[in-house]
Length: 422
Image: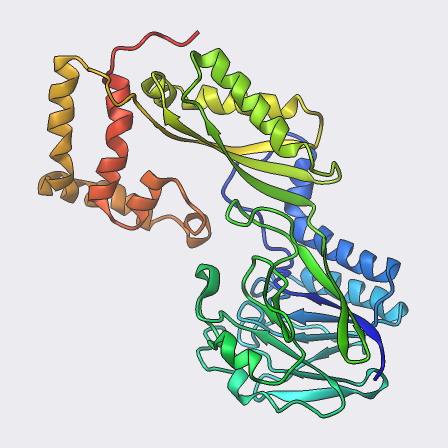
C-alpha cells in the first residue's frame, strides 16, 4: 500500500466574529475581526511549507449564510493556493454550511471535492490506495444517524470516514447526525475525521476516531490551542499523528485565589503575577485573551463587589504592561465570599433577612418580568447568545428568583459599611 500524509481540519467558521467582550484599544481589533481568516491562512501556509497529499475538512467551513461574496472569494483564493501546490481538498458540509443555509455560491477550483448531501458515498483515490467515505448536510437540523448508512470499507485500501456529528451531544454541542463511539469503532474504517465538537479530542486509537476541533477559538469557552491534525500513513498504518496550532488569538481562563491577600494592593500584585504566569510559556505571535476568576474567602469581599470596574481596569493595565499585542483581559469575575465567621451589624442583618424573602415575592417577580423581561426580549439573538454573566443570563432565561439571588450580594455590598479603597 502507498504512503501519504493528510491534514484533518474542521469547524473553520470563516468570518465568524469573536463576541461578548470589549476589544483592546489597539491594532488587536484587526486580529479579532479577521481571526478565523488568519487561522485558515496559517493552515494553508503549513500545508505548503510541509508538503501534504490532501486536506480533509469535516464540516462547518462557513458560519451560515455569507453577508456578501467576500467570504466565498477568500476561500476560493486559499483553495487556489493549494491547487498551485498540487493539494486536493475533500470536504463535507456541516450544520452551519448546509445546502439550506448558504444561499450564495461560487464555483470552486477543480482541486476541491465536496461530498453529496442526499446519500453517503465513497471517493476512491487509487494513487494513494485511499477510500474516502462521507455525506454532507442538506439541512441544518439533521437528526438522522448518517454513520449507519456509510458504505462498507473497501478491501486493500486505507478507509477514512468524514463525518460532522454531535456523537451523543459530546461537549454540550447539539446532537446532530447522532451516533455512538461503538458504531464508529465497528465500522471497519481506519480513521474517522470528525467535526462539530470544537474541543480537539482523540476518542480512540486504531481505529483513530478524532475531533480536530476548530481552527480558532471564538469565546472564553474555547480555551487553549486550536488547530488541526497532521497524519502520516505508511503501508496502511498510521505512522505519525500530531496536532499543530493555527489560532491567532488564544483564550485563557485562570483562577486566582485571594484568601491570603491582606489589602487591595496585594490583590492587584497577585493579579499581575497570575497573568504573567499564565503567559510564560505562550508564544508571542498571537494575542492572548484572559478571563480571570477571583475566588476564596476574603475580608475584602464587599469591597471587591463595589469596585469591580477599578479591579478590571487594574487587571487590564497589568496585561498592557507586558507589551503591545501580548494580552488583553476579557473580564474579571468575582467568585469570592466573605469570611465564614464575619459578624455584620444589626441593620445589615435585618436587610439581608428581608432580601432573603425576595426570590419568593410574586409581586416583585411579576414586576421584573414586566420591566427587565421586556427589555431582554427586545435584544437581538446574536447579542444574547454569548452572554455569560449570571445576572444577565438569569434575566434572559426569565429565571427571576435566580436573578434576585444573584443580585443580593451586590446590594448587600453597597449597604455594608466598609473602608474606602485606596
